[in-house]
Amino acid sequence: MTSILPSHPQAQDIQSLFNRIAPAYDRLNDRLSLGQHRVWKQMTVAWSGASPGNICLDVCCGSGDLARRLARQVGPTGRVYGVDFSVGLLEVARQQTADSIQPLAIQWVEGDALNLPFEANQFDAATMGYGLRNVLDIPRSLQELHRVLKPGARVAILDFHRPSSRFIRNLQQWYLDTIVVPAAESLGLKQEYAYISPSLDRFPTGREQVALAQQAGFAPVTHYPIAGGTMGVLVAQKPFH
Ligand SMILES: C[S@@+](CC[C@H](N)C(=O)[O-])C[C@H]1O[C@@H](n2cnc3c(N)ncnc32)[C@H](O)[C@@H]1O
Image (cartoon, rainbow, N blue to C red; front, top):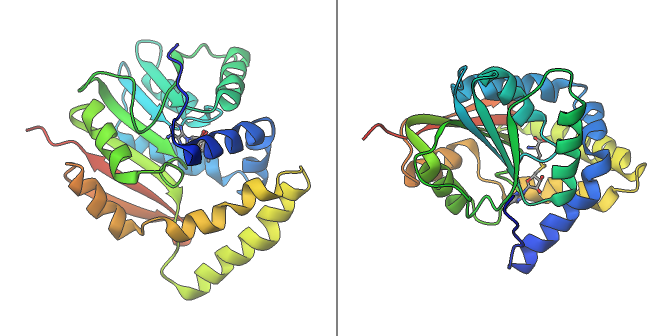
């Protein structure tokens, strides 16, 4: 396993934030999305175009839920690499996969989304769930995904999104302030979840994400708003030539 420690102090803050969240992360996700994150992740796997026998990548894999879904999709003849820089979450991922009834072909890799530890043109498909909003350099992260994908392969990137409707936007903010943060507070993780709202304010809109992916070399690129526009999936293909 490759070992990395981000040199940027802000990256170290993000890394330790996710190490602190690790033990409660899955329980909170289920509770806060009313189980809906499973549906959104399944849609993300479908949009990535991953098929049986493929070699796939899940970047910012955290506790590995999306990577395990990808592994079920590629089956026993395929392989999934789950990459994250949080040792705490990778340990949860490893444990949960070991406990899984169905054997899954996943390799957990401690690595940086901004400097992926893979050769160019390796992967048939890639996914990323709630990672793009957290990386310090979105264009660089998209360039890295573009580099490691095979020509013609797609990446599907699921994340929160600020809806264009003012009403739904206010509803989303209300939900974050009155449901998400207090739920996290009950587990002693208030600060750790209070970061979602400011990170979402900084996060590019769907249209801006499309432009950034195009600048990284992807074409075609589409952003699909889901859950009333409070979430979105950016689907980007690496051209054949
Ligand atoms: C909100 S979690 C998402 C985890 C998982 N994909 C999911 O959907 O539940 C964001 C993850 O991004 C990881 N992360 C953030 N920046 C990273 C980077 N530069 N390199 C690798 N992982 C990073 C964090 O450690 C964390 O596990």
